[in-house]
Length: 92
Image (cartoon, rainbow, N blue to C red; front, top):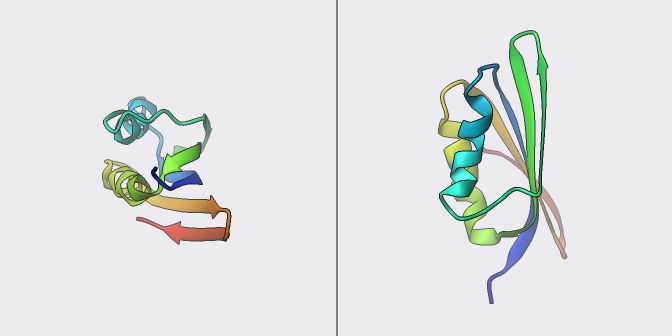
């Protein structure tokens, strides 16, 4: 049985028509679907939140790393919640 965590990725990036589908690719190639996705654009920049309630813990750093490597992404913040507490990490 795999350990899962609740995770919220917050991505800050340059606004681009291709950004949103590119942000989903790191999830899709691992057969994962985010439970929610919220985006907001302001002055040529975008802030996107992607969250999963039960993500395999071993995949969190892989997805965060892939998100941080996307063209136009300036910062990826990862917030995890487990039964034992919470954690906040910056990936890019």
